[in-house]
Amino acid sequence: MEIKQVFDNKKEYIDLLLLADEQEDMVDRYLDRGEMFVLEDDGVKAECVVTKEDEGVYELKNIAVVPEAHRKGYGRKLIAFLFEKYAGCETMYVGTGDCPSTISFYKSCGFEESHRVKNFFVDNYDHIIIEDGIQLVDMVYLKKKLPVAAS
Image (cartoon, rainbow, N blue to C red; front, side):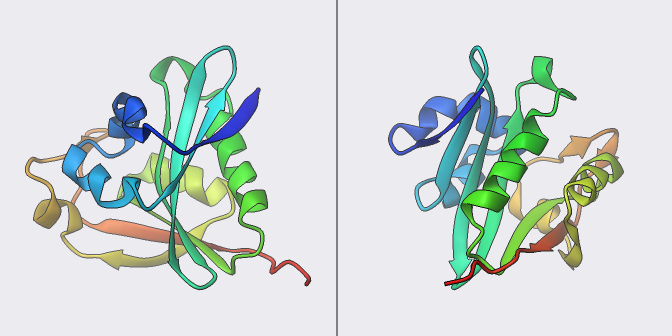
């Protein structure tokens, strides 16, 4: 298994990106300014995009695992990698829909609920988004405080 950064042709992974954020113009808002990582294990199994939002503050904007590789630990491995890669940052945020299974996953990775953006999915997407049978309305932000690396 190998995790590598993608510097060019990030749109090559659009099908995977759209699994986590299903409207391409929303992906376009952060893709160029974000750092993209791909986890390969006999082919691409997962990807993520992280943006710098402020000094010491990063956001996991997109993380997706190919459907046939779900529940095999790839998403968790990618998040653990990010916590190491961005060890110098103070806070890592992730925004997601108000879906219990997704929120539970992030909490199991060490995130805790931070705040919500009311009507985010209704106001920003051109179609209704359903996840696990639930219509997504609010964006739920979770955060993880990371230990600041000693200098």
